[in-house]
Image 1 (cartoon, rainbow over the protein chains, first blue to last red):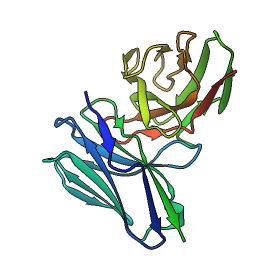
Image 2 (cartoon, each protein chain N blue to C red; image 1 turned 90 degrees about the vertical axis):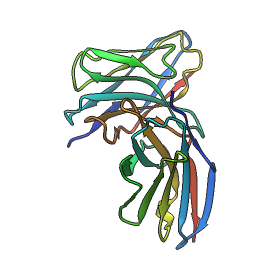
Image 3 (cartoon, chains in turn yellow, cyan; image 1 turned 120 degrees about the vertical axis):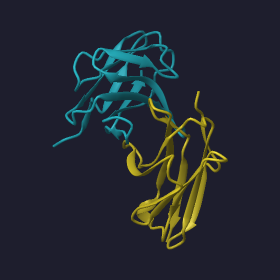
Image 4 (spheres, one colour; image 1 turned 30 degrees about the vertical axis):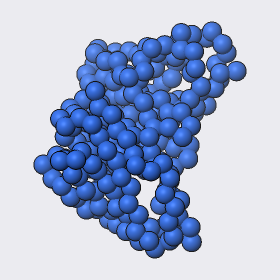
Length: 110
Length: 111
């Protein structure tokens, strides 16, 4: 089955810095990838997604990069703000349910 | 408003009791999911359903049961066989192989 791991459980940055959160997955058949943001006591919120036929996708202040060769996914947040402080999860699907990683806690100090 | 509604927000269970967590969606999504989240951990899949009257076990289905009699409803029962049920439970729905939309969660505590 699929397993999803993160490189760092926590990340601390200064306001205005760029943040990069990384994720690795195991199943080469995975074809859909999502990043979620979760604030304390709430359900995860969708940030951005990417399919396996792409290697980069940009949103507002966020970019997701997909490297299928090494099965690696990253989320880049530009000009990080205190409101970006949360837990970030990557989730991976090979056609059925999403499988989640353990999350990276992003702390932004001003 | 369209969305996913989980109830109750907080639930307390005595040892040996079964409890049922409600999840309702009005997004007309075919697929629904239940995840469990423990402190500092990711989301682990309990059960999922891709169509009415059909569901599959996830990674940690033991001690849980579900039903999918209606498209909009996917209740989760935490049975007495689940030895460590204290956790944050999240329900989600999806229109297909797209992002899952989450409810606000139910925090279950054994007392």
